[in-house]
Image (cartoon, rainbow, N blue to C red):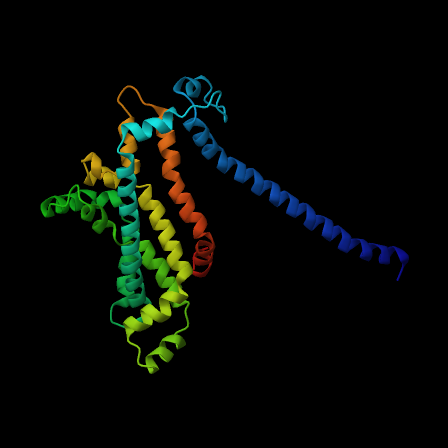
Length: 289
């Protein structure tokens, strides 16, 4: 074997290592650019909430205020029943999310663990409902709530949104991944289906449950159309719906809207960061790629 051949073989691992290092650097640069682009709108929103209307329109592209003012936050608290709107949002998003976890997990358990005729058809029908836009059923549901006398009530806000086809699908995929031997062992000990569901399946499906909870809570917290349709009383509006009161036909106080948006974003950010570990684990173990 010639000296030149030995030299080429020695340089190949070094070249591969250099190529891998360059690839890692390029990937990190790409991710860094993506993170910056994703954060710019949020930075501008927070900055705009501390700016006056003149400053906001004088230099709208600036990410930093020329002069800091609390006008937006003061107006939010003074011109709206803000605490009431915040309470409505927490009741609507929180209670509906809890009911969704209960009903979706029960449905998912039946579709994943029980053997009955038409199980596959039921699951297909659940998936079909994912293709139906929520706006299609909006008017029939509104008419039904009107006849029940549930307009401008918490039950009118919560009950029609208390289940989710996506949640049923995701939880079913998570339940299927749990070994059936655990069910058989629990059944030998005399456990019923309800006991197996509560004591065996749910504790092992915490990541999937956290994923459904976070996605559902975020979706409900940011929901604008449904609260506007079901409620007309200002004391029953949620926070996103209440912020529309600042949008006039001719004049809109954008600084106030941005301040309200910043305050509205905080609970979602806290909920996501607290459940981030379970959220990532749930997405990776529930069949979603």
